[in-house]
Structures are given as structure tokens and as C-alpha cells.
Image 1 (cartoon, helix red, strand yellow):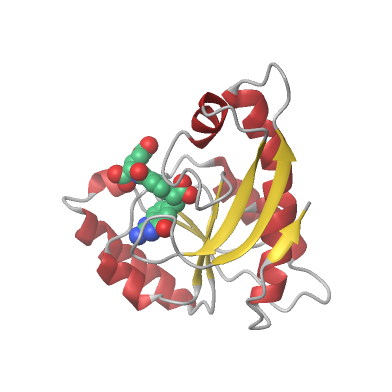
Image 2: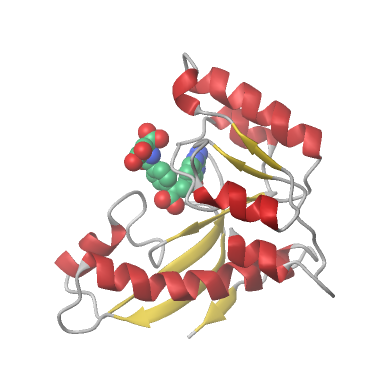
Length: 181
Ligand code: NHR
């Protein structure tokens, strides 16, 4: 999130209108506020259902009138109704080389499979979990002695390069995938 926010200066085709989190204690909220970006927190645990949470989330998002929504570490599966409302303008970054390892625990699964490379993928969010059109990928080597944590740290560095590069392109309506080594 911060990598995206910090990139949106100067000649960037987009600007941040809102940073929102389902966790009121998320550190990113204060960091975004320090950059002068409006923030919102709505605690999903305070809602009786996914649908009730999403209804409030959609109200908050729509009030900010975004052209593009970027998920970053957002861990709540979104229902098809919510997705439809934002279809074609919601992105996510996922810590694997999709279509490999959708869902959770991606680094542990890559290591267990004996993969020699790993990475991250930016994709359009569709109702199918981590299966929307791919907008960019970055690759890293898996090194001897890697643990899920050391691999995650190496991939995270690439996440912070890839997502801003994809958003720059997407914000000009260009969906050609960004491929980083
Ligand atoms: N929602 C839809 N409909 N489609 C996608 O592609 C989505 C999505 C919501 C989040 C991010 C994804 C990731 O990159 C994302 C993509 C959470 C889960 C999950 O199982 C899976 C994938 C992603 C995020 N969430 C559990 C749930 O019941 C909770 C897990 C937890 O809290 O640890 O929501 O990783």
C-alpha cells in the first residue's frame, strides 16, 4: 500500500483518494494519514455477516469515487455481489506465480514442492479466488536453506516494485502484463 501511495506523485496518472482497512489497528492507516491520504477503518468483526460488512465497505468506497481499487494484504474473501460492483477496476497482489498456489501459505507450498523460483502476481479481482486476468508478474530465485519467511521477504521486495509498475500502466487503461525478471 505504501509503495503505491509513495509512487503516486509527479507525472503519475493516478492519485490516492482513500486508504481503507478492515483492521482499525493496521499500521498502514497512520502511515497513509501521515502522507495526507484520507483513511477509513471498518472492523469486520463488528458485523453480523460478510454481506453486512461489504455493504458498509461499498458505501465508504463509493463515497470516495475511486476509478481503481487496489487490494494489498486484504484477507477477507469478497462475495460475488461486491466483486460485480467493482468488476474490471479492482486489483490484487498475490505472493505466488499464479496460476500456481492460489489461496494461503504460498511460500510454504512452493518450498514443499521443491520449486526453484517463486514470485508475485498482480491480477484483476474476479469472483474466482486469485484467478482473474494476470496484469504482471515478478520472479525471484528460491535459495538453498530458504524458509517460508526468508522466501516471503525476498518476494516482498519484488511486490513493492511490481504493484506500482502495474498500477501506472493500468491507470492509463493499458492491461499489457508487466513482466519483471
Ligand atoms: N475475493 C475474491 N472474490 N476474489 C479474489 O481473487 C480475492 C478476494 C479476496 C481477497 C486476496 C487473496 C490473496 O492474495 C483476495 C483475492 C484471503 C483468502 C482467504 O482464504 C484467500 C485469498 C486472498 C485473501 N481468506 C479467509 C476468509 O475466510 C480468511 C483467512 C484469514 O483470515 O487468515 O476470508 O491472498
